Image 1 (cartoon, one colour):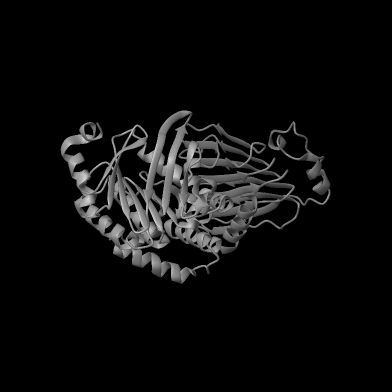
Image 2: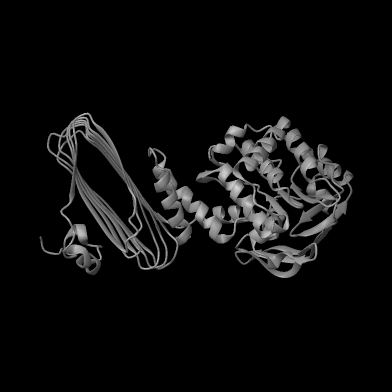
Length: 244
Length: 247
């Protein structure tokens, strides 16, 4: 068992170390998922309902492999999704994930995506909806190795703050050692649009109903491409209604 | 039905409405005309309860209720509808979901049974067809990618679905071509003319009034009604301009 990390480590700078300590001894080694060359895999990660939930995975996509991962991070106390992804030639990795929480929840998604070989594609889309004093973080590093030409990486990170006490941390990071690559990232933090709120209320939605609907609009597009995505849609919708 | 008395309102601390008095009885449609900046849209927003539009004096009653004491969604449930001059886009939310949840929220507030998905879709399709709107557009996100005219038509589809008792229509005619103007005019007549209904139609131009005949026409200037008359007043305004007519 390795030592409990501290906040001095970049990947743990916003982590709830006490919460992590409570599960550290029983925390299994990161789950390893290998997708063989030319194979396609979809995974949907639903929250377990535990107060503290830490999921870690090492993902290796062999040449031409594709992985679409849909993840919902909603633990009431501390939720952490940690991915270390290695992409071989022509692999394609898609992450669509949401942090949704209120109260004192600390929710984070921490990724390292390694474009080790040419022509791989990564698409990371993360949406956070945070009320109360919740903290939602995305730390995402895209590392492009020497020789990984024609890499195509994108990170889109948006957070919606519902209360003054809520915090969003967005940190997309690029480390590029090849010269013919396309890497884009965008991060925004905002609030519900008052004109949209008024429009919805003028049609009869009460404030909580209007907020929930607008938040669905903000988040639910994440699951559009999920096969058999009903459960994650329902879980996300239920959590949004609870925080709205 | 709608009773506005000596209404004063400010936006961002600036007085816009300065003692507006207006009475629209049930069964009537009144047009409000006036130049830019006279307070027409402010009046619409104050009646619908938009945050930031502060009433400093006077009041507005809807039937026997104090309209200004209600939240925007309570006004909708009471039967008030605002047709927006600039309908708002809501990415990620389909028109069908938006309207179904809105309508059912109103119905719950009134103690009526909610419509099922199938019932709602039938209603929405029928209203879209009446207003010459492709029902497929209702599957798209609210107003996203709609042209100006399509947004206005969609406002009327919403009005047809909500069946309000009183509609405040803020420049619903702007952005409409001739055919759309006729369709929208017919829609207003079909949905909103009746002994227990009322309409306040805010417009710059006389042309919508070719299709929707007002019972009264009022001229708004500097936040007050400065003239009132019958339908012929709209024609006079069109001929002579506001400066002359309001003088």
